[in-house]
Length: 185
Image (tube, rainbow, N blue to C red; front, side):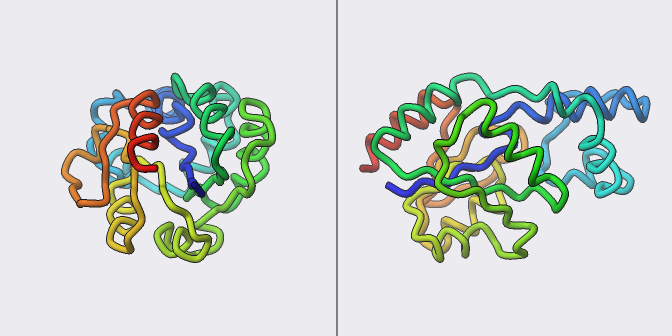
Protein backbone atom coordinates (compact mmCIF):
# COMPACT_ATOMS: atom_id res chain seq x y z
CA UNK A 1 0.00 0.00 0.00
CA UNK A 2 0.95 3.64 -0.47
CA UNK A 3 0.35 5.21 2.94
CA UNK A 4 0.38 8.93 3.79
CA UNK A 5 1.06 9.77 7.44
CA UNK A 6 0.49 13.09 9.18
CA UNK A 7 3.13 14.37 11.61
CA UNK A 8 1.60 16.40 14.46
CA UNK A 9 -0.34 14.31 16.97
CA UNK A 10 0.05 11.25 14.74
CA UNK A 11 3.81 10.69 14.82
CA UNK A 12 4.52 13.33 17.47
CA UNK A 13 3.24 14.55 20.78
CA UNK A 14 3.73 18.16 19.70
CA UNK A 15 0.64 19.60 21.40
CA UNK A 16 2.07 18.84 24.85
CA UNK A 17 5.06 21.06 24.06
CA UNK A 18 2.89 23.71 22.38
CA UNK A 19 0.72 23.85 25.52
CA UNK A 20 3.77 24.13 27.82
CA UNK A 21 5.22 26.88 25.61
CA UNK A 22 1.93 28.81 25.47
CA UNK A 23 1.33 28.53 29.22
CA UNK A 24 4.82 29.84 30.00
CA UNK A 25 4.93 32.60 27.38
CA UNK A 26 1.34 33.84 27.68
CA UNK A 27 0.46 32.86 31.25
CA UNK A 28 -2.41 30.68 30.07
CA UNK A 29 -3.86 27.60 31.76
CA UNK A 30 -4.23 25.34 28.73
CA UNK A 31 -4.53 21.58 29.08
CA UNK A 32 -4.60 18.86 26.44
CA UNK A 33 -8.28 18.22 27.15
CA UNK A 34 -9.13 21.85 26.27
CA UNK A 35 -8.03 21.14 22.68
CA UNK A 36 -11.54 20.11 21.69
CA UNK A 37 -11.30 21.84 18.32
CA UNK A 38 -8.71 21.56 15.57
CA UNK A 39 -8.91 25.34 15.13
CA UNK A 40 -5.92 26.77 17.01
CA UNK A 41 -7.41 30.27 16.70
CA UNK A 42 -10.18 29.17 19.06
CA UNK A 43 -7.90 27.20 21.37
CA UNK A 44 -4.96 29.57 21.63
CA UNK A 45 -6.45 32.87 20.51
CA UNK A 46 -4.46 35.77 19.09
CA UNK A 47 -2.20 35.68 16.06
CA UNK A 48 -1.69 31.97 15.39
CA UNK A 49 0.95 32.48 12.71
CA UNK A 50 2.99 34.58 15.15
CA UNK A 51 2.51 32.08 17.98
CA UNK A 52 3.52 29.17 15.75
CA UNK A 53 6.61 31.09 14.67
CA UNK A 54 7.52 31.82 18.30
CA UNK A 55 6.98 28.15 19.15
CA UNK A 56 9.10 27.04 16.18
CA UNK A 57 11.97 29.20 17.42
CA UNK A 58 11.66 28.10 21.05
CA UNK A 59 13.55 25.34 22.86
CA UNK A 60 10.23 23.54 23.31
CA UNK A 61 10.38 22.35 19.69
CA UNK A 62 13.58 20.47 20.47
CA UNK A 63 11.71 18.54 23.16
CA UNK A 64 9.02 17.11 20.85
CA UNK A 65 9.10 13.32 20.99
CA UNK A 66 7.43 10.58 18.97
CA UNK A 67 3.98 9.41 19.97
CA UNK A 68 3.99 6.11 21.82
CA UNK A 69 4.15 3.19 19.40
CA UNK A 70 4.81 5.30 16.32
CA UNK A 71 8.47 4.31 15.77
CA UNK A 72 7.85 0.58 16.02
CA UNK A 73 4.70 0.84 13.89
CA UNK A 74 6.45 2.78 11.13
CA UNK A 75 9.17 0.10 11.10
CA UNK A 76 6.48 -2.57 10.68
CA UNK A 77 4.66 -0.65 7.95
CA UNK A 78 7.88 0.09 6.09
CA UNK A 79 8.50 -3.63 5.44
CA UNK A 80 5.64 -4.04 2.93
CA UNK A 81 4.40 -0.55 2.09
CA UNK A 82 5.53 2.76 0.64
CA UNK A 83 5.37 5.44 3.33
CA UNK A 84 4.98 9.18 2.80
CA UNK A 85 4.69 12.13 5.14
CA UNK A 86 1.74 14.43 4.45
CA UNK A 87 1.73 17.35 6.87
CA UNK A 88 -0.05 20.69 6.99
CA UNK A 89 2.84 22.38 8.77
CA UNK A 90 3.36 25.92 7.54
CA UNK A 91 6.21 27.39 5.54
CA UNK A 92 9.28 27.66 7.76
CA UNK A 93 8.83 24.21 9.34
CA UNK A 94 10.42 22.17 6.54
CA UNK A 95 14.00 21.99 7.80
CA UNK A 96 13.06 21.24 11.41
CA UNK A 97 10.49 18.66 10.29
CA UNK A 98 12.97 16.88 8.03
CA UNK A 99 15.59 16.81 10.81
CA UNK A 100 13.11 15.51 13.37
CA UNK A 101 11.84 12.77 11.05
CA UNK A 102 15.37 11.62 10.21
CA UNK A 103 16.39 11.65 13.89
CA UNK A 104 13.53 9.39 15.00
CA UNK A 105 12.53 7.47 11.86
CA UNK A 106 15.62 7.45 9.63
CA UNK A 107 15.06 7.58 5.91
CA UNK A 108 11.96 5.39 5.65
CA UNK A 109 9.71 7.95 3.97
CA UNK A 110 9.61 8.14 0.18
CA UNK A 111 8.68 11.83 0.25
CA UNK A 112 7.82 14.56 2.75
CA UNK A 113 4.94 16.69 1.49
CA UNK A 114 3.91 20.02 3.04
CA UNK A 115 0.30 20.61 1.93
CA UNK A 116 0.09 24.19 3.27
CA UNK A 117 3.26 25.18 1.44
CA UNK A 118 1.86 23.68 -1.77
CA UNK A 119 -1.58 25.18 -1.02
CA UNK A 120 -3.26 21.91 -2.05
CA UNK A 121 -5.70 19.95 0.10
CA UNK A 122 -4.51 16.71 1.63
CA UNK A 123 -7.35 14.87 -0.10
CA UNK A 124 -6.28 16.11 -3.53
CA UNK A 125 -2.66 15.26 -2.77
CA UNK A 126 -3.77 11.73 -1.82
CA UNK A 127 -5.55 11.42 -5.17
CA UNK A 128 -2.66 12.89 -7.18
CA UNK A 129 -0.08 10.65 -5.47
CA UNK A 130 -2.39 7.60 -5.59
CA UNK A 131 -2.22 7.03 -1.85
CA UNK A 132 -4.32 4.11 -0.64
CA UNK A 133 -4.57 5.32 2.92
CA UNK A 134 -4.16 8.44 5.07
CA UNK A 135 -3.32 8.30 8.79
CA UNK A 136 -4.56 11.58 10.24
CA UNK A 137 -5.98 13.35 13.31
CA UNK A 138 -7.66 16.37 11.69
CA UNK A 139 -11.42 16.06 11.25
CA UNK A 140 -11.38 18.40 8.25
CA UNK A 141 -8.53 16.73 6.39
CA UNK A 142 -9.94 13.28 7.20
CA UNK A 143 -13.42 14.08 5.93
CA UNK A 144 -12.11 15.75 2.77
CA UNK A 145 -9.96 12.73 1.91
CA UNK A 146 -12.76 10.29 2.78
CA UNK A 147 -15.17 12.17 0.50
CA UNK A 148 -12.68 11.66 -2.34
CA UNK A 149 -12.66 7.89 -1.73
CA UNK A 150 -9.47 7.69 0.32
CA UNK A 151 -9.52 5.36 3.33
CA UNK A 152 -8.57 7.28 6.48
CA UNK A 153 -7.36 5.95 9.81
CA UNK A 154 -8.34 8.69 12.24
CA UNK A 155 -6.25 8.72 15.40
CA UNK A 156 -8.73 9.43 18.18
CA UNK A 157 -8.23 12.89 19.71
CA UNK A 158 -10.42 15.34 21.69
CA UNK A 159 -10.78 17.58 18.62
CA UNK A 160 -12.08 14.93 16.21
CA UNK A 161 -14.98 13.38 18.09
CA UNK A 162 -17.77 14.52 15.75
CA UNK A 163 -16.46 13.19 12.43
CA UNK A 164 -17.98 10.16 10.76
CA UNK A 165 -17.75 8.73 7.25
CA UNK A 166 -17.80 5.24 5.76
CA UNK A 167 -14.16 5.69 4.69
CA UNK A 168 -13.00 6.86 8.13
CA UNK A 169 -11.88 4.27 10.66
CA UNK A 170 -11.23 5.56 14.18
CA UNK A 171 -8.19 4.12 15.97
CA UNK A 172 -7.20 4.86 19.55
CA UNK A 173 -3.47 4.12 19.15
CA UNK A 174 -0.78 2.83 16.80
CA UNK A 175 -1.49 -0.81 17.69
CA UNK A 176 -5.05 -0.38 16.41
CA UNK A 177 -3.71 1.40 13.30
CA UNK A 178 -1.49 -1.59 12.44
CA UNK A 179 -4.37 -4.02 13.01
CA UNK A 180 -6.76 -1.99 10.86
CA UNK A 181 -4.25 -1.77 8.02
CA UNK A 182 -3.97 -5.57 8.05
CA UNK A 183 -7.79 -5.78 7.83
CA UNK A 184 -7.94 -3.33 4.93
CA UNK A 185 -5.32 -5.09 2.77
